[in-house]
Amino acid sequence: ADMAAGSAAEEVNVVLNWEHYDFARSATTLSFQSTSVAEVYWRIVIAVRDRETAHPGRPRALQKIGVPFQHVRKLNKSRASDKPVFIDAADSVEYEVTADRKRKLQDVSNALSQLGLCARLVQVNEANGAPIVDGRAALCTCRAKPLHAAGASIGA
Image 1: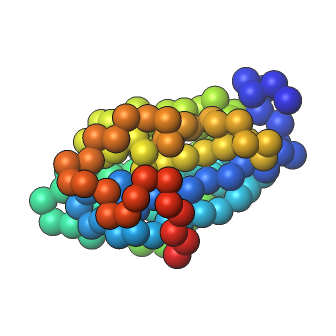
Image 2: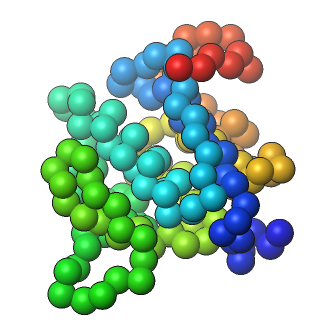
């Protein structure tokens, strides 16, 4: 399928590898699949935000969702939205996700960089294994050594 067109019917596979989260490293992963690009984007944002806000001294950028993840914004209830809407479990605020094409998932890498996080934290693949956000191929920028041998897979 044409990645730029982003077929809504194709499943996307996501792995967040918390070994590459410098501020609370653990040899665990969060994995999920979805056919919704917006849901994938939202779940990545919330997972990273929840880890970031749990650690005093980390940048508070994610306390305002949408910074630095540019495809999420607070729902403007004064106008109808044609974008998927998600409710933040932390504060019950509604957000719309404008990531509607798989190529927009690539913004995740830029957001991780802005937060000073390792690009290897997030891997997003097409159902056929083709990378969309290629965290595994990215240079590891973690400050500490990995918790387990490279290539090992640990589920949580």
